[in-house]
Image 1: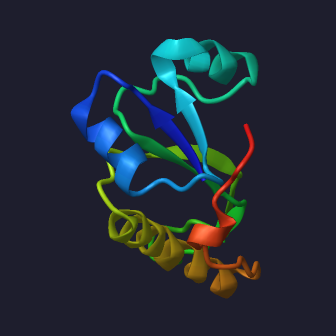
Image 2: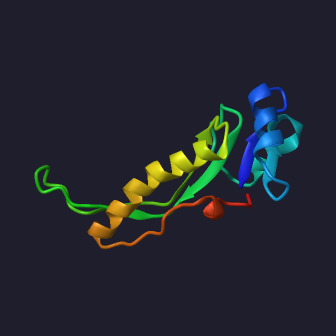
Image 3: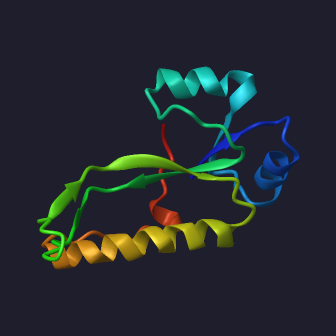
Amino acid sequence: MIVLHNHLSRESRNFVLNVATETDVIVDWYNGGREEWFTAGEIKGISSFPSVIVDIPEYNTPANEELEIGITTVPASRIAIREPTSIADIEAFLEEINVTLRLSESANKTVADLTLESLPSEL
């Protein structure tokens, strides 16, 4: 997983020390990480630390006949889980996203559930 880290934040230091593993990518925001992040063309506006990055795949939203809206394709995106304190926080966030992704199947597009193992590990 990619963790955006601010060494000046107690919460961020605790997360990196107690939750992140040695295989995770730690982007230390104020020690060159910000430049690395923007050079890689990543999302802007990160304002909370720690943040864990999630890649959401393209999915479809089902048609809504009542609102006269057809099936809509939502493009893939990269988002940040802001200020998680544990793996359980990350899993709960992923499950919320998975509820939406599972609806995509009824709109003719199957999308795999997001898991800790599916979190990106490269910028």
